[in-house]
Amino acid sequence: MKTNLKRTAGQKHGDLRSELLREGLELLDTQGIEAVTIRAIARNAGVAHSAPANHFPSRRAMLTAIAAMIFADLADQTIESVAAIKNNPRQAIQAFADTCFRFAFRTPNRYQLLWQRQLIDQDNPAVAKEMDRIYSALLASLQQENICRRVDIDTDAIAIWSMIHGYISMRLDGNLVAAEDTTTSLPRHKAILLSLIDGIYHNQD
Image (tube, rainbow, N blue to C red; front, side):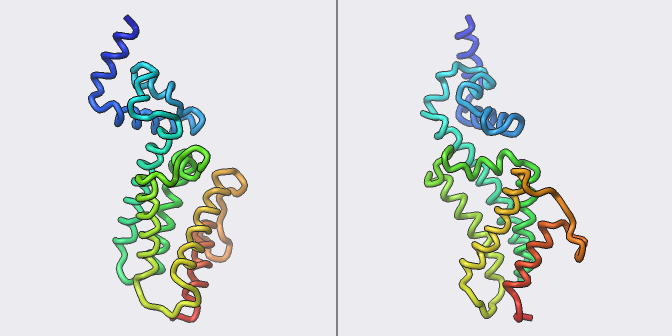
């Protein structure tokens, strides 16, 4: 009887793959990366623990699919934030960074999963596509005006992303805490970004 109930529940879901991914995100948000297992997702979805194998042959494949969804969400948000600002690269960079900071601090488990190379396949086409969209949004923020660059645009982009990701990682790992810059009265992460932007656009005004 129990097996029949599970099968019926699975059939009611219609698109089982989407339902499994939704359950995976729920587990990730509420219990963290370690809790996201195929067995736990199947149990929460009300299907037999063998059912996800038709869609995800391994935990790595399942986590990769979840990561692709998260990357897509972050890509949409960063693209929208940059597109809303015209002809002001400093503000566009700040908008890009603020979007990343907000995303990471509101959904830390989602953000941390994205960079677990031992758990997800970052060469997966769906993941790589969304990562490229995020990087393209950052490049777009830097390309909003012509300036005399001391380094190429990719170096600037990598510098900005390294600062954003490094600060987020140290905050989420507990190595840094939220603080305020005493000179600007800005949150520390915004002040650090401002300092970096000033370096990129030094002597351009």
